[in-house]
Image (cartoon, rainbow, N blue to C red; front, side, top):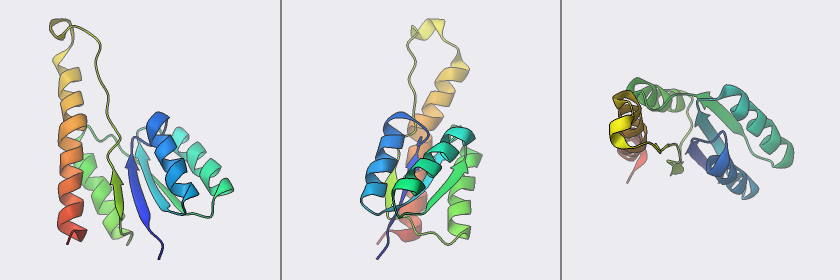
Length: 128
């Protein structure tokens, strides 16, 4: 039986490496990140090396509307997610008082809210 992994923050770094590991093990992929070109390049690389299907979905998961939109697109496409790899995230290297609130808000939205929301959406849809 074919399985599918959703990997957030998949365009580079650890997310891209997770995608390659899952593909090497025969898992189909849904990859999401903000960078469309990076996702398309990774899709091409993986599909040329492994016998898996790769769907890319460009989303900014620091925006809660886009989190729901990602879930809705996956559900509408009839894909069942077996593995959720909540990899998307970022940090800040400035002193708190010297950084902008909008950066902290985006970081909290992505690092906490998005991953929690995705977990809840997928568990309530497919969890047993």
